[in-house]
Image (cartoon, rainbow, N blue to C red):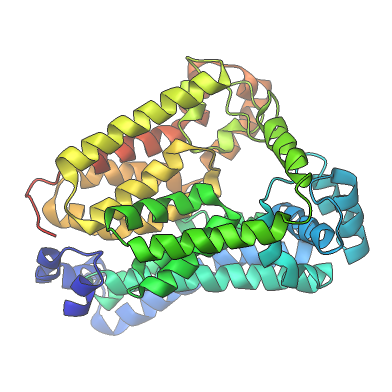
Length: 430
């Protein structure tokens, strides 16, 4: 158990509480001992079957991975010296790779916005034809997510039974399978951030965070802030240098591409765009960030962002003033704050795996656990997609009904951020 405390994510006082060690067994205490292992195996097997069917099976067999197609096609353009931010050349590269027509059509609504640094990393995958590249990307995402989940489980002061049950719950309730279904790089990048935060080697953690920055700075922000609070200056410096080097390598010969990339980003946020958080947006029900809530009261985009950033800053000050102390709580708070601050879709909620150790602390202390668990349950089910289909045109009409049914997940993220910013009932030491 001392190794868990050394890793810096779990509270040493929590590790001394042996009542948690038998928690998993208590869940199945009503079963005869000889049936417990079999029951857990059945539960996990069913969860794994659900995960495989809903995510990788459909992604590989039916090529549902439109998000992967965007960065894959852009990387193929980059290799050939073609502007990766122009739609038609990107679609042409997808066609030449053997990609199905469905993912080619996806590019009509998904503008290419990935940074040039991401295209450099994607180049080896983009050299492959579509079907092997799609399968490889899917398996890579699963492997990284599995490593991240195993690393989290290794830190928990729980029985083996409890860890198997948590792993089964993660397979079913984590939105990871949604991200794999879409082929979104967020699955792999979120996993890299989690591994970076939990890695004891400053060099490995720096490299992992640097790669994450190259793909999705809005997700890597979580790891960057955690490193900043832990004063891991060398890791931050190496990550920043790595990011800068690949950004330079990706755009050195084609600075004019930046203008097209910036245009695509701007287009994605215009009314009706793929990142538009306004109440009338046809995609805003998929978002977790607070802009989807503030947009009910503030219409101008820059003003909306300003309100959210001020809110995030106030929550950050509250956390640093009242709650800073537990590394588990720090990781949990910054994971939620990251989702709150800027554009994030439902599948990015897998970043909340970082909050599991702190949830264990809340449970052990009986403090705010029930309310936090309710928020996690709201995020565990993609019910907003069901309501969006059922509501039809009403899903695009600002109303109390729309806010309640289609904005409950960003509201849960906001509440979690506030809960995690508050101190625990008993003050704990680092």
